[in-house]
Image (cartoon, rainbow over all chains, first blue to last red; front, side, top):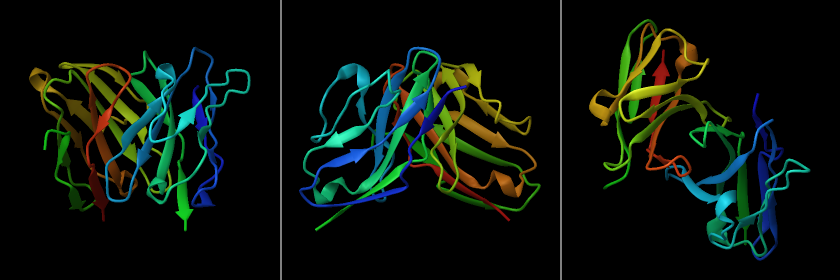
Length: 109
Length: 112
């Protein structure tokens, strides 16, 4: 069965510091990985997906099949990055998403 | 607002009662999903529709849960004989393709 692990419930960094949110997955098939973000009092929204290999709001994520990881990185944290971040694994052609438990990122001034 | 909408936003019900939630997807999206989220957890997949066809249903969904999407437009999720364990946020999402799901604001259910 598929599984997504986000080991940190809370990650606190200072503004301007690098950020790395960890995500590991377990899946026997070919994985499709996503990062979703939920800002305070807003709905869950897609941040980025591994197949597009794009950078959104300065965030990037590389799929490492050997380590079964899809860590989210940003070189310089900004205050507006404070939010809940969920890593998700897509199966069934990307229709079914399995989410991790989420990491709350807090960027301090 | 052209995003996914859900109604009601909050529902308080007594144990044993039936409840029904509605989701209106973005109009051109043919795929619709339901998820459930409890405190401290990520959303858990419940079911998925493509147009009016329900193509996948999670084993998490007991016989008390039923979802419909008549005419491939809005969807309803009904929970019969609610239990306290059903208390959660119920999220709906829609998408034009498999890869990018747009979420609604959710319906928070409290079973007393």
